[in-house]
Image 1 (cartoon, chains in turn red, orange):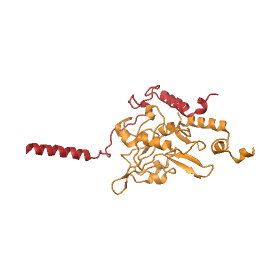
Image 2: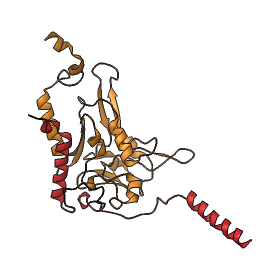
Image 3: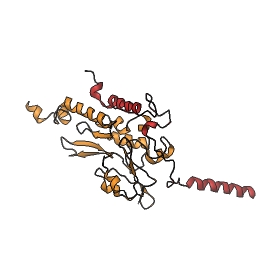
Image 4: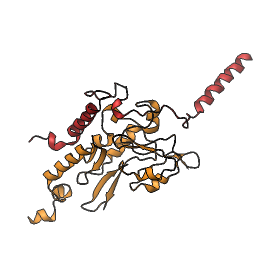
Length: 77
Length: 200
């Protein structure tokens, strides 16, 4: 009897937790960090620039824009 | 660095909606919310023109001006972002925006307007960079990863340009100078001929 009660209580808690909604009204972690601070996730970060170095980050984006979007520059002359 | 800007080359856009798909995929945008869309003028008529439209990250953003709870802010690079924890979903920004950028997910059984969602220039939001909370509310933060917006990087014809305003305008200027002017130089006329070329 006790086991059944315990099991049903655990099941109930699990079900209610699963149906819950993540709170969206909490302040969360505020970040005023600039973009060049990076994400800290090495797997997704493009190599070739230094975090917290605005000039390096800015040059990385400029080079990427020219390489990826400027087909006149990439095309053989 | 100058301000971050988008520009869409109407002579190159082929209305493939690749930018729309890239955006939805990158940020896992919910059904019914389109941070970016392709608008076509004179659809089906020879000479039709398409452009890809999203938040233009205005210098003097009207959405910022009308927001009653002041949830908008601007980054150092001029990207207009907003705080979803402050937004009350009133929709004023939607009426003020000339590009129709603010989107409102239908939340709840009766289609209650949810918190506003819009293009972030792939710069995330006020949460910790690269955090799960940032991704769930605003999507990926590609700028902090040293990348440019996914829509522009995925554009097959490179019609959509995004990045530092100086770089983007220089790329566009170089194109215009090389291709000359008029639709007969690039686009419909190149593919199917035009009255001017037939006569020439």
